[in-house]
Length: 208
Image (cartoon, rainbow, N blue to C red):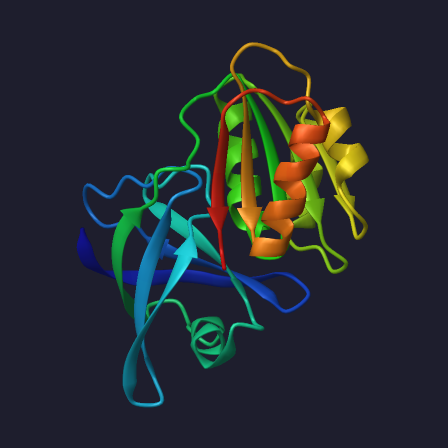
């Protein structure tokens, strides 16, 4: 769908990272792990970028997480104020949370947005969640703490994720791995899943 959405809030959620929350348009139903295309004015020109939904649901509002290393477009989103509007299209993507009984989410860098969304959605549904997050400047630490408090497993590391992935994988029926990040992380994370003996479904979103 295509719509114009209003900004509810812009909040710092970590080093050079903000969460932008928008009003959800009518009939908008994005799942954790899907993404949208945002279109905004940047220096007098209309530009678009894709961002993954980082809220566990889109009832009334939805959130995207924006890294400020994303150039002028990201900076323009960080400068938005409540009441401003942007255009949104979507949702897009097939690799999202669909109620799996155990979600093992491996996130690198900007993959933290969908990671916290999926973990929260899984716990909200009474299911299990584990997050392995590779970053030397982590974002969404408050939400990760709440995932831990609710019984989810969370490992944040600046090093390789091999041991953490091995610990996160249990082999229970329906366990599904979700991998979100740039290409190098995706390759390392999927290799770690293989080394851990994981043979369940793997859903991957490669950010390039």
